[in-house]
Image (cartoon, rainbow, N blue to C red):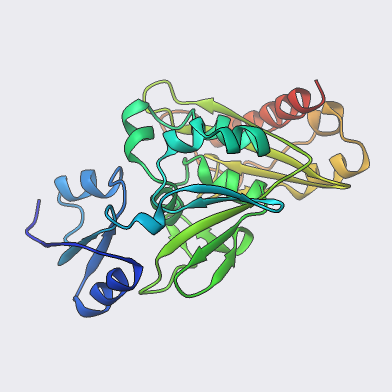
Length: 265
């Protein structure tokens, strides 16, 4: 691990000021990705700015047709929240299956979203549930936020403060879970908003993406058979030691169908 300066921010404004005042800073949320990266000397920030003491960045609320999760809220808190379980059970279920207990109690929604790991679960929730990512400077639609492998629309000095999920009529998340890490080899979030459907896939490509053909089919008939024979091209998908791009394409169809089955069940 390289040397760095450590700071604890008192509030969001203080964190933003420290970001602007240092040469090559990194924000520290739960640290589930950043700390291993530092330990392996794959990154050498000049300063770490810890957000742990900022109370305004923690908590959950239901506001109208939105579930609002503040950025430093751990996954385990989202999973256990009675408000989330009632208003948006698919989100609670997703959060309860992230990683392992240690990750769920330390990892935060803001850190996960900002990292844009291709195998993370929360990006599928954000895109599938038509979320808005709120920063200290602006609001960003989830469809525009995730831009590539570990790439987002965040600009220098921006800090995620909360994520606002649109409450659907019904939703379901299904994933093929890596047995060791708990990451999504493929994860599919399906949500229905009136006559509209959203299908978001994580784990399969460089970042989360929607499947327009499945959405159109479900908007004509919301039934498992509508997606059962839709094939996603493997051309832009990832292949690795865990499985091929072709198998990931197959899993997308399987888990989309299973998600719809659970919704209409």
